Image 1 (cartoon, protein in one colour):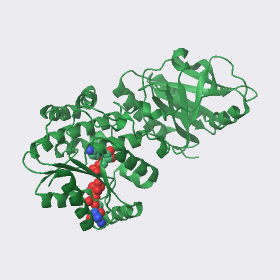
Image 2: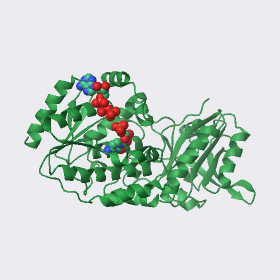
Image 3: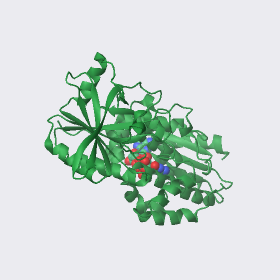
Image 4: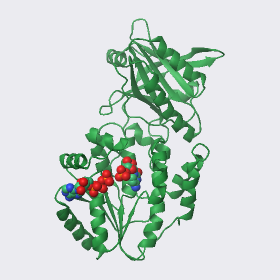
Length: 432
Ligand SMILES: Nc1ncnc2c1ncn2[C@@H]1O[C@H](COP(=O)(O)OP(=O)(O)OP(=O)(O)O)[C@@H](O)[C@H]1O
Ligand SMILES: Nc1ccn([C@@H]2O[C@H](COP(=O)(O)O)[C@@H](O)[C@H]2O)c(=O)n1
């Protein structure tokens, strides 16, 4: 069986072997991002045997040998980067007999309590797997557990492994019980200020914390320092064009610029282009903070240009938030935060456009355009094409963002038809 990697993310605060820290956490192991995870908790007491529970745990733990592992550090930047490194190590070094799943631990309804790691099923109970995982624990960066059953196979325990001198041994054991499915998907606990930032300061702080490990952050921060934090819009309208890849944003924004004799800007702005690939390679916490700051830097240009002419913007805040939310939230479309959730609010200190148009295109037409263009796709866009569910989630998140909400138009018709529809919208919303 090949290594299967489901949707992934980052870890929260330091985890040690103190049972009290873990006892109230719920764990979720995700077999498939489209289905509900298996939720389980730890218990100090021997739980009553339960046939249904036992069958569920058989599926999870008894595939040869099972392990869980996650990074341990208080530093959120280091934690996010360790998680990414761990993912790379596991994907490249685990034997083919292993199945790699996402494992998260969280306190239900407690924001930012989510801790992310991996669950490993080794069908062949390979010594190589155990040695590799024990080596990782030696670096003291990671916390490793194994899962063992009672003799009759009805009860399961989690054993925490720890480095004692030269030996890595299991030091504590806790019973495992099935936990209730939480009201909201646990990934919602870590959206605000982890992948979506609602103020200049919050995004800026992340890059400040990165200065040592990512020297390029200093240059991005210098650019951010130069921009006015509360950019005020000029008297001309600001029109943002949003949409998934190949929905026609570039085509439309160029036509609008010509017809309205306006300025054409984009987010992230050109001055950040040289660092984009660098930050795209970083974990979501850092990558999303970079894009968030990009919006504030673009806002300065928008403020300046809107004093002189109408401004057309190719992607802005809606893109930053929609992609971040859709990527972070595992599971089905229904797992997205509900329409009234605060995650869809506009940042209080970011320049607000007069009109945001969301271009939507039927999936077949979008795929046709992508093929016709024949350009290399970014990792995320390649995933978009492969993953129809993710595409739907990004689009739905776009639609839910408020104040300003986007006006959705079907951009599947010809370029001329799309342009005239958007010009009508501009007339209606922007007094042009
Ligand atoms: N209304 C339309 N009908 C048919 N083809 C279109 C239409 N609008 C754009 N296209 C074509 O679709 C392709 C993608 O368009 P475009 O580059 O404008 O999209 P985009 O949203 O800017 O993509 P990206 O976000 O990847 O830059 C181009 O080849 C373009 O000529
Ligand atoms: N304001 C923005 C703009 C873009 N992104 C991220 O970039 C990707 C799409 O950019 P393209 O240049 O390919 O159009 C997308 O994956 C977004 O995550 C952003 O976050 N904010």
